[in-house]
Length: 430
DNA sequence: TCTGGGGTCCTAGGACCC
DNA sequence: TCTGGGGTCCTAGGACCC
Image 1 (spheres, rainbow, N blue to C red):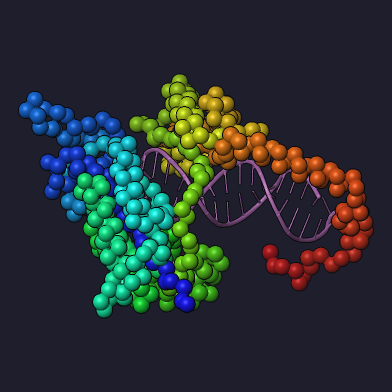
Image 2 (image 1 turned 135 degrees about the vertical axis):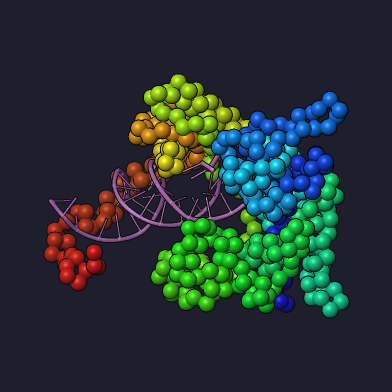
């Protein structure tokens, strides 16, 4: 019996935040709309029942576009773009504030709709997931002459279920033998797309793509590749593995080679525990540690209080407390401090974060301040850790008492190593 | 036109222990 | 007494992703 071929789907909601907003404000359909900025541009309800929306040109301040509708994208406005730059490109585009609670609500709905048909899901944030279709009944079946007909039909069913459960949202799905390729495939036919690929499609569908499209090749790596004359995934595939390792290190170079040839056997991560929780804010104007001391102090305390509340809401404690600063030159500094025991208490967090702050040079003005908790654990976990640590300490003590001969010989007889040849002219080059 | 806020993972040096 | 090496934790920074 052959094992079933892996069938991994990547599902990506189309312009998610913007599409959720269009459900609420259908009169904006067909217009360039962007989500982002601050909270100061709520739509205004007029006397005649209609609404007045803020325009991008009305916005002044620091912020980025979170999402834009396809009409806004046509004008050159994309996510992560500075709002001021976006305003220069599309001054008449409608600007809406982000409403994460609402997006989370629709996120839960679409994920539940998928789970009804295929329960093995990896969460990849608010608007995308991986789905393992390998063992879903019917997914491996051929339909007529199409060996992938079964999985194609299943993916369409998933799209329909999402559309129905969200009141009209569309998504794009890529199905391939692994996560890496599916992530690329889901983008090939956006929006409202479905792309099913096998390894045979690698040269025609994947290799022409820009290297930057690969999940894991970011702006830095893409620039380094480009400087070496490597621009597409196919360019990477044509590079010798050894050459990639030479330029990018054993780990990343090897991965680049695997990625370009579509090799990826990572399983779906269906459960995950949070690693860190943080709270940060960018100021309206840069602040100075001395001149704006009072204002900074209030912001700092507020961040610590919100962090404490977030920890409590998630039911975790953090043992390492850290701060993040961003200076007026956009350079970032972090400091952290591991406490004797984990906490979720605002005052304890504020005190630890204050200690961290003392270790930073504060002559430059600040544009961002953040507070972070890591080394997270559930309250019961702390007791268990303490218990384990005590047992280990007891074991070590017993070993020291009962078996002194177990110490390394070199520690008892240091003379033994005196004459050993150390690094000489034949040693490793410095 | 100066660049949000929430995360994860990796690397690397030093401390410390055995 | 400055000589080995492995393992783990802490800290700082950086790349990357949604």
